[in-house]
Amino acid sequence: MTDPFTPSPELAAIARRWLKTYAGRNSEAIVKLFSHSDSVTYIGSDEGEIFTGNDVREMFGAFTEHQVVLELEDMEASGFEAGPVGWAYATFTVYSPDADMRVRFRSTLVFSLENAVWRVVHVHNSNPKPNMESMGYTSPNLEKLAAAVHSAGVDLGRTGIASVMFTDIVDSTALAAATGDAKWSRIVTDHVASLTECVTGLGGTFVKSLGDGTLSTFASASSAMQAAQTIMTRMAASKSEPHLQLRIGIHTGDVVEANGDFLGSVVNKAARVAAFAAPNETRVSDATRAMIGGSSDFAFTDAVSVTLKGLEGEHVLYRLAWAE
Image 1 (cartoon, rainbow, N blue to C red):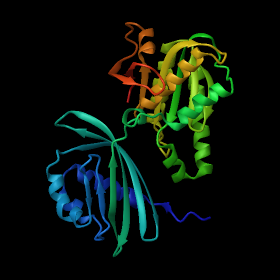
Image 2 (image 1 turned 45 degrees about the horizontal axis):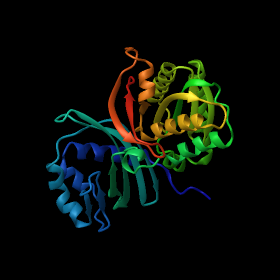
Image 3 (image 1 turned 90 degrees about the vertical axis):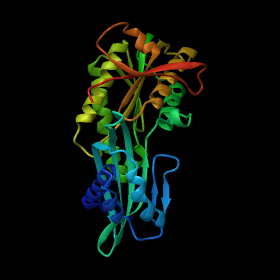
Image 4 (image 1 turned 90 degrees about the horizontal axis):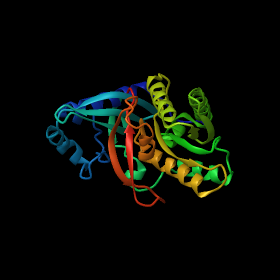
């Protein structure tokens, strides 16, 4: 089957321009870019931000004027078209100067070609929160990877105290659909090879990959966290498309190579910690954080106490800082 959609730098550029215009509160320009169709729809990140039909054209200008002026940073967008229809998606950081806060966002825009002009017929903005935080479940990829380790009796490469690191590519399903199976397979293969090089270069053991998730172990918490920082820094510096984003989780505990309770607890909790992480974020357990004591080699922020699926009690997780 021939793919009817082709890459559209034009729609990617229009998407970037529309989002920046919206952030800058240029309401007149925003409304002019909307479709004349009664099907036009806008869905924002807040529960009440749903406008359809004439409400979009008649009320959206007033709606944007009540917003604070925002700045968009690190934006990346891709567009695709097929005849008179097209779509684009973008990821970016929203900075609010008034609140001095930054939040990651993503947007999808659907376009209709009307009188030779591309117009926006649908917009959906969302603030990507971890599944564990927003809905209480773990990424299926991480669940499958953790289960595969147990069912196959995988050798974790060490016994005793070890730090277990899970990684997971954000929005992999959408990226795979956009790039096609063959290209996506090559992208993931190259990603895993680069990650493996980083892990082994810091004395770690690359244990297993499944889909776009990976599992590695380290003899020390500091090596695991250094690997996570290096991986995140490399990916941020990459100029290739699609630009991959990771979530990483690290937990430290007593690893037993047999199929025992300790192995299950350490691996499962590390997977849950990774699932809690936001895009481009590394989360570590309190046990991992405690391993380095008062060392100034690492910085931690955003400590939270959360419940983790299948594990009793509250668990304190820290965000590991890195050079973004």
